[in-house]
Length: 218
Image (tube, rainbow, N blue to C red; front, side, top):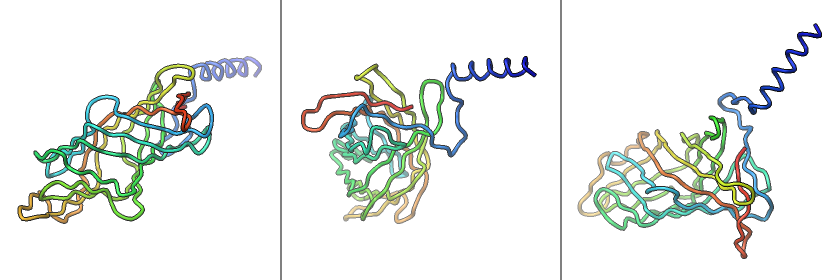
C-alpha cells in the first residue's frame, strides 16, 4: 500500500510538472490575465488581411482594429469592439463594413501544447453587421461558438501579448440584393457556410498614458 502511494505521488508530481491536462470540450477553465486595472485591451492585425468568405465571394480587409476594457485582472473571456476598413469585396474597392454596435467575445477552452484553442461569439444589440457591397449587402447577426480560434502567448514579463488566429467555418449570414444591378448569389436566404481567417495581436495598456503591460492567457 505504501509503495502504491509513493508511485501514485510520483505520477501526480510528473503530471503537474508537464502542466494541467487538456480539459474536456465545453469546459472553460482558462483565463485571460492583465497585470493591473484599469486596462484597455487593443488589437491590431498580426499577419495578412482579415478575410470573410460568402457565396458571393470574399470580403478582405487590410485594416482591422479591436478595443475593449478589462473587467478585472483575471477573466474567462474578453469582449472587444472591432473596426474594419480598407475592405474589398466581390471585385469592388473601399467597401463599407459597419459593425453597428456588434461586439465580439473571445474565450479559451482547451490547451494544445503551448497554445490554447477556443471560440468567439458575436452579439449585436440592435442591427446586424452590414457589409455594403454594391448590389449586395451582406449581414452577419448574433451567433455563438464560432471556431477554430487559436490563442498563443508571446513575449515575456511585462511585454507579454496574445496572438489570436482565426480559421472559422459555419458563419451564418444573409445576402440582400440592392441597387439597380443586384449581384447576390443567394438573395434573402440565411446561409451557414461563411468562413473567416485572420490573425490579431492583443495588447494591454494603461488608459491615457498608453503604457503597455503584460496580457496573457493560461
